[in-house]
Image (cartoon, rainbow, N blue to C red; front, side, top):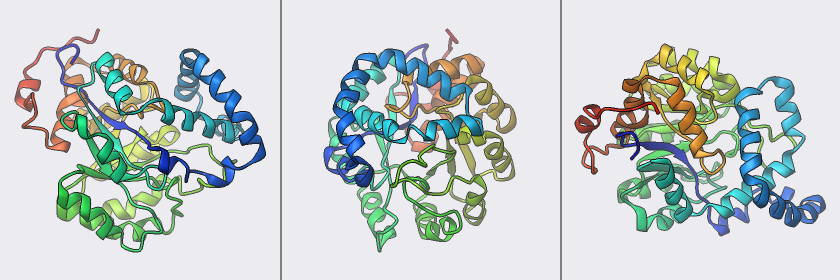
Length: 334
């Protein structure tokens, strides 16, 4: 805890070796990938502090159509970096970074088939008090409700994650494919976090799902009791995401990959009670995400976005710091 605020990072990831082997198998078997990856990993590990800054600057400031096209041409190199980051930052390293950055609790999102819900639950056992898990399900699973319900009934997950791109959902099929999952979330009173925004993966064979914000509206409209959290505030599509959220009170946004100016817009248009802090660690540097939020918000807003909103969403009232105590805690923008 830094600046007196119990801080929750609502968007982080972990991956185990078994599921990583399934990720983009066709791309990983390409001769270019096999030849370059060993050298790339060594170079990227040594240059990580520098290229973290470069990637963050570019991602926060250049999201136009041309920029995204150029990023997509680096698809296999981008995949190498994602896999390297997942290999480097295990659960112990996540907790160390949380301690360093003053983050008290984090939500880890499964993205099946890229990451396994069951394996993540097992990995976090030593840190159960500090980590929550959002479950996900593969598109090809014949019984998505049954698959998710086993984790919900066991009390091992705090929500559900939908990633249209990794899940390879076409825009037209997303609402009806996810209807039963949303109904389950409504019944269990669990939130759903949905990835929004374009990921420049056109050069990869295994990631080609829906990127259109408009495709989410039928699902959000049909299930008004479900709390839908739109991740990354849509990245380049933040205007569309905020417009959608203004129409539906059961929507929230999460701040990862967004600069302070967009976070400020989100709070101004939706109110600070509907904004959640997230980093997307290890894909985005947690300390930079914290800095962007602190430079965007007032002290009172920081308490809500860093802490109170997530604690309510995750039902963390009985954790080491109650919401009432958090709301009464003085803060510093520092």
